[in-house]
Image (cartoon, rainbow, N blue to C red; front, side):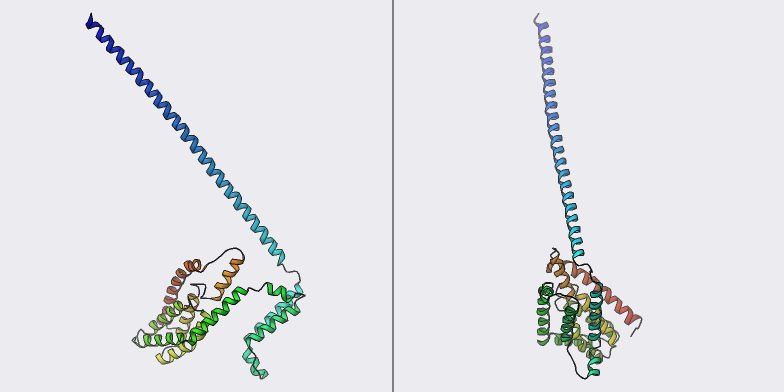
Length: 303
């Protein structure tokens, strides 16, 4: 009788184990389902948050765009042309001043006495203020960008000081030594390249207009002493100075004016931000200009 009872007990144990395993599996599945439901709900919440943030950003961008457009329309209405007679009179005076400035030396020889460019500009400005309407000098002074004018004043003072200290003469003598040490076959190519790259590098920290004015006599003397044509060296100086002026805010006056106008409109262009984009452009443009002057003046023989 005992041998028949033992297998029944074993069968009951296996049934109980199977039931317990199925219960455990169902509990595990329930837990997994609950976890999945929680995770899916969390994902939905995150997606909703992302969608709402994107929508809010788009709405704010649209509002800013509308605000800028309204400001632009207000500015256009503010500075719109209201009196065409005043426009014609002011344009005539302006063109007359420009003509006098271009023919200043010829007019001085014709009249018999010389007058400075500064007085011509000042008298023209006073004539414009007097003849173009009832605008007070105080209103005109409000529109003057004194920060940019002070920057130019200090920049030209610095340029003149460096010139008096002998920086331009040192650059000219160094160019003379380099060019004189080159053989006659490669003298023109090396001379153009040296002048181009030297002027490009110097004009990143030196005002390009003052640099060209100071270097012109030295380039002319260099061409005579080295028995080289003047035009290739002149254009190398012009290309290098103009392209070097695009490297930094100090290189050209238009850079400072653009930065000041951007600051007035709410966009600040710092020195290093301009440098980040200016230097790569200057390097690429100088390389292209170097290839150009070599092709034109050396290979094609243009003089």
